[in-house]
Image (tube, rainbow, N blue to C red; front, side, top):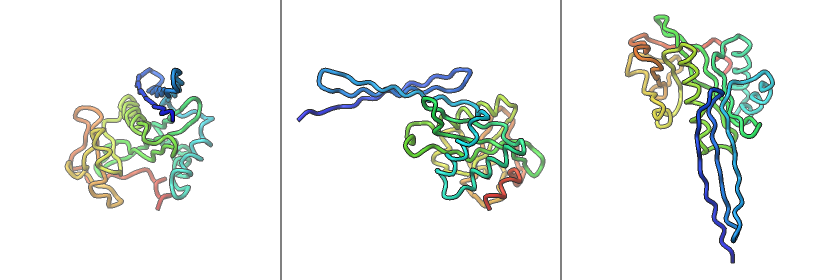
Length: 204
């Protein structure tokens, strides 16, 4: 019996066009080595991506609510940052950042929805989308961001409970409602309820 071993290496590089991740796997077939190199690029969405993004979101969530939400945000020009993960020309991941505002008028962005195709999960793609999205938001002039999500996951990107600095959400998210400062001194404190764009009513 021949035992075949697979070894994989990951290299991550940032270019002005976005993050590139190279996954190289080599399978030992006796004296031969077969190599597979997969390139992932995180980039802004393009007009031709819209229908693919819609299908991806519909496949990753129980309903098409998130797909309709993103379409509505795009139509209202409320997607300041909208990124895709492109693997060898195929879109396998997506993240949106849309405007939010505090009760006292501070303007920030909300992360979500975020989605990665089933067969491409656990490869670091979601993390790439989050990091590049935060970088793009900072470059666009936003100084803080919020997310409703799993604290154990989002804490690795610097998010922490928004209640720590006197912020709350309109959905009763508790500790799942988190905030991160994107630029020094930009985080609002004791600003009350943070509201998402009106299009989020489509998810109710």
